[in-house]
Amino acid sequence: MYRTVVICGDCGEKELTSEIVRVCSENGGALVCDGNRIYTTCKEPYFLIFSVCALSDLYIPDCIVVLGKALLQIRNDIDLTGNICIIDGENSDSIHFAANVKADVIGCSMSGHDSLTVSSFGEDGSAIVTLRRSINTGSFQAEPCEFRVKRRIDDNIYPMLAAGAVLLLGGRLPEKST
Image (cartoon, rainbow, N blue to C red; front, side):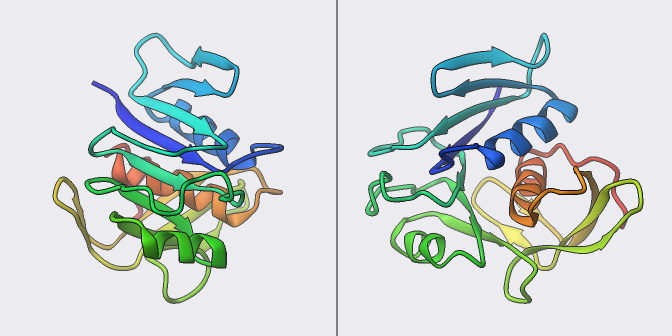
């Protein structure tokens, strides 16, 4: 059984998709449907990842929806009931979009109001990601914790935090710090 991830609004260089696929590949593997490509990163992948620039409906229950920056082609009244939505807490378009959908929302940024943030960076390029508050949805529960995520030094923070959130929600945490 796959853990389904839908990445919406990651157009252009697809930095968000690339980071989520990389991290998921290292933590269970992924079957990826990315525009005109479909591929797998291992023989029996745990994650099923769809990356789309446009979306008008989503009928996949208990799905992880990750919002990118380009949300103009995503229907703003889409019903995401029963899904979990990961947003960039520093992107006002994502915040406004998330306010209109019917989903549990997890904010990711360096700001004090978001659920997931970075507490420190290692010299090896890793980051300690911190879940600041409990998350309790109908199908998932997590208590505050810290875990290590490998990252490229030049990465933006949101793609790395979003990938960490996908691992957390997928039950595939790498090395736990606390």
